[in-house]
Image 1 (spheres, rainbow, N blue to C red):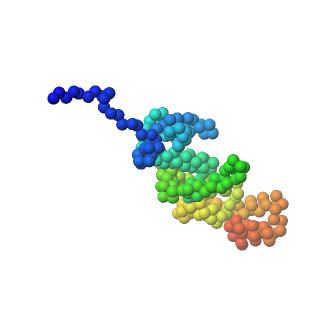
Image 2 (cartoon, rainbow, N blue to C red):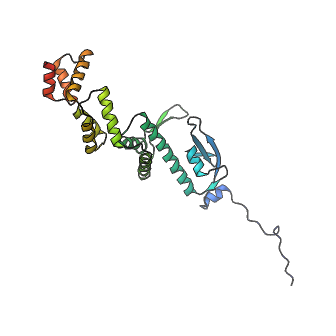
Image 3 (cartoon, rainbow, N blue to C red):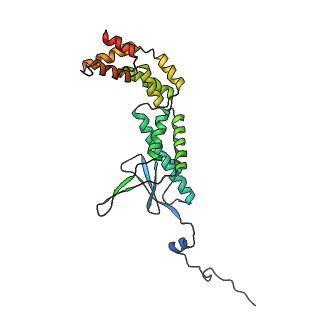
Amino acid sequence: MIIKPISSNQVPQKPRRTKKQLEAIGAPQLLKVTKISKQVKNADRYSVYINEKYSFSLSEYQLAGARLFIGKEFTQEELDAFIDESTFGKAYERALNYVMIRPRSEQEIRDYLTRTFLFPKPKIFTDKTGQRHIKKQAVDKLKVQSMIERVMKRLQEKGYINDEVFAQAWVSSRQLHKKSSKRKLEQELRAKGVNSEIIATKLQNENLSELDNLRAVIEKKRRLQKYQDDVKLTQYLLRQGFNYDDIKEQLNG
């Protein structure tokens, strides 16, 4: 008996399953980059589309490191990693903008990131009928907390977090513009999370003159015709942390 070889054309071909059939049997969906475009509102970020739908955005630096290109395929796990990296990039960018406005303490930055990403504001949108709706944003708390710690670590590595530098800048600014008392400065720095040792050192090194500051504040308030009543002026000065006996002496003098 002679067995004839079967050509490839004669081998019965299995019909290719459709997308719906693959989803029905639980087969993993093919994930492919179909578009990468620069954002209009933020030219430093690029939108990445997966299977023709927007998926996430990356900064130019992140995009170069990710080695993404149109046609690249990856798994769902890899996509989740890209989305996490996108969130980190946005958070780091927001934190940088926040610290560039003025010097910030470590606690101020952490509180800002917590408010922004752990407790985001609800989204407000209008449907086709013109009715407005409020939608709360779902948050993975453990993932967000991990991201915040990563942002804080990066800021520290880059020198953007330094409570000693912050405390010095705060005291100098307050002395220049407000003539604050030592007690008031201590209260403000404590409220911003600066530890007691740093506060004590900065207040001691600044060589503050309580009486000179008190006289300057009294002169300013009277020049602006505020608190002409000594009782109300005394109450104000006490709230600013000045000593009661010093206040009475300067007002009576």
